[in-house]
Length: 73
Image (tube, rainbow, N blue to C red):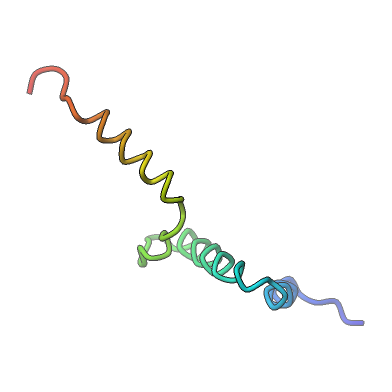
């Protein structure tokens, strides 16, 4: 039996992913493509990178930390 190339094995494995994992695999592959480029051309590739809970926590931390400006301005 002929040995499959890495690309062929990847495609083969994607065919057997459960339907709920296909979007995750797609977004992961898209993120790899974005990091491979010298500049990011599609902000949509970052949608879903963090959970809603994490986004809310980050927003609260940023709001808290930058609420007051210290020192002279």
